[in-house]
Each structure stands twice: as structure tokens, then as C-alpha cells.
Image (cartoon, rainbow, N blue to C red; front, side, top):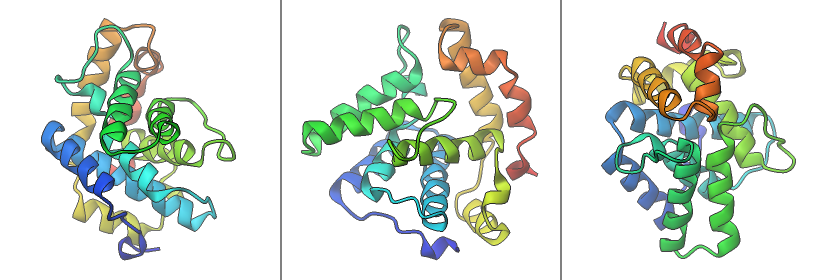
Length: 198
């Protein structure tokens, strides 16, 4: 598997999701969102996980949108806020209600500890890919050549410290959220030790 083998959906919704992420995310968070899709799609292709590439791409572009100041909520966890943004975006894209709900679910579930690939393949892949990109979980599941290509095309740009600061802020304001739980479990150390930054 090489970077050129990964299918990037070329649909109005996919292009629009990238436009939204580009407009609102920092360069580091944007590249993280793109890498999240690439790792997820590559893993799915290499391991026989059938997924909807447009749905996964849109959710990948939206999965951390709840961390940016324009969409940050002081009452709900960032992934739930992002799920609402994904639903609204999908409505604007003309998706039926069921597909809007799926986009929202995938964004929310990327923060779960585990997602069943049979019930939600896109959520499973996004949870797995963000675990790799942020805390360095499972790099051995991806060929070294692919890792090098993805990181060269979409560099990390200091995502580790930026993301740690976001999570610490989320945890302070919303201690009962998954971000709060992650901070208490030592996510900052895992982020700092991510082998993708080595």
C-alpha cells in the first residue's frame, strides 16, 4: 500500500468538507484531519474493511472541528459539538437524514475506546486512525513507506503540543468529557512519545 493507492473521494460533499476544514482548522489540525482519513482508508483497504469513502472523508474533515474557537461548546464535549457541525454540513450537502446521522455518529465515536467494525466500519476506522496520529497507537499496522509518504505530503507541524493544549483546555472546562478522561489517563505523555514525531 502506497499513498497513491488511497482513494480520495471527489464529490461536492468531500470537496466542501475539505474547504470547511481548511477555513477553520489550524494548519496542524488540518493536516491531522487529512492524515486521519489517509490512515483510516489505508487500514480499511489493507484489512478488508468495507467502508463508504465519502462518508469517512467528510467525518475525518469534521472530527475535530469542535476544538476550534468558532465551534467550541462550553456545555458538550468537543466531539459532540463536531457531530452537530457534521450533521448541519451534511444537511447543506443535501444528504438524507440517515446519512447526516451517520456522519454525526462517526465524529462522536472517534473518541470512544472501541468501535465495532461490523456495526460502524467508518467509526471504527476513524477511531483507529486518530489513535495512531495523535497518540501513536499501532504504527506497525502501516508500511514504513506509506508512513513516510503521508508524513512528507502532510507534515505534522507540531500537532502534538497543539493537541495536548486543546485537550487540557477541554478537560479543565468539561472534566466529565472523554477529553477529561484522556487527560487524567496520561494522554499528554502518549502524545509526546508518538513515534510518528520521531
